[in-house]
Image 1: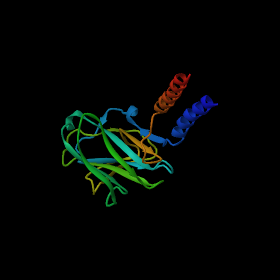
Image 2 (image 1 turned 90 degrees about the vertical axis):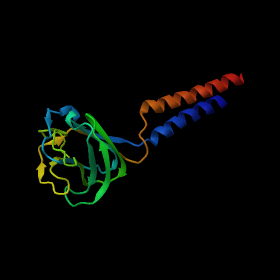
Image 3 (image 1 turned 180 degrees about the horizontal axis):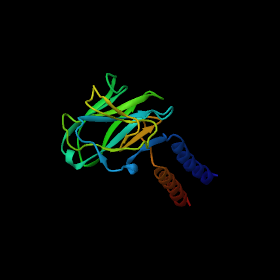
Image 4 (image 1 turned 30 degrees about the vertical axis):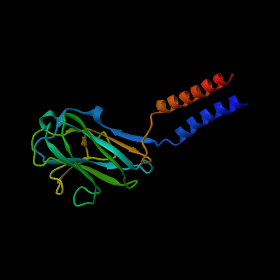
Length: 195
């Protein structure tokens, strides 16, 4: 009876852990990159449509060219392209490739938000973008942050954005399986010791 009870407890703990896992939603345009690189604009960004359920903005990563490596850019998350409310802001040092910005913040479900980048007057080669509409929920914007004039419905930045349904980290299913297997092993070892 005790064996069945302990085994049931191990399986129950594993299932409860999996039931409490937050789901994740990722927007990834990176594989569609067609080689276009932003030059001469002093800022750019991407509008995003927030999901109805997965509205916790975990992170966003933009791809930048090697020419902008070492520059310091400002990131602004806003509810409008110009003159909106700043939802989040930070600065980051650019590396060639993907630059991930951790946001970890709830945003309004079903809203449009703008992930904007101020190049701080740098006008060389910067962000990668795509000249086809690969992400239907948003578009690229170009120009000086705060007074952007360029809105390109058929363009998208090369980016990866992750949203979840809650602020808790999203465990990998294999981790939960490993935890459950470990608990079952502990139960088995305990039962063997009692014999």
